[in-house]
Image 1 (cartoon, rainbow, N blue to C red):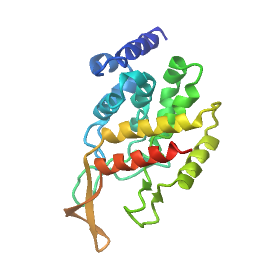
Image 2: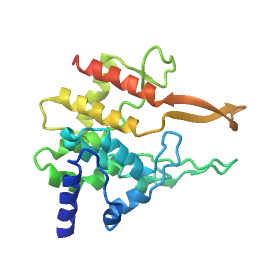
Image 3: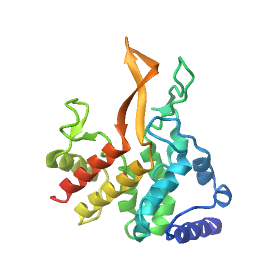
Length: 241
């Protein structure tokens, strides 16, 4: 336990710096961080390995919100434990026709809450549940789109009703003893923006032809610029709550 307290003290001191650059040699002595440091992210949405993504997301938030930097440190910490798994079954990590890696991380947010809990409860003993909520729901806005972007019904349009519905549901699923839910939701947008800023500038996937993926032709399905634009609009709508 003494080693873990020393680790938490080290993290707390360094998360308060203007630019966070954590010592991977030291952190590798702790199994959770060793897994995070070594975890690849072969996925079109990402341009860094897990540790690089984590550091970039931390630094996307100013040191005045060190509490949210703790959230970013752990928001994807569950990924090494679920890579390539879905409902306890292994799913394909590679495109069969080319061998190009494509790693999946189903339900990683729930696992992230699990592995982060002992740290978050120690650092935030009075309101740890709020920060675990932010970790659990950091991807909650992923399926939202501006109305002018698409008419595809697999997406949810950004409007007040749809946002209220999904955020109210998230609170019911993870009850919190908190009065200012509006600020909580705005913090969730801040976390989502930091996550997006640490991802790929352009997301490309193979074109589908005759129900097969054509790896000789890639199509752009999203960009960082568009993701941030959506989150800006989500933030604007939440401000009206």
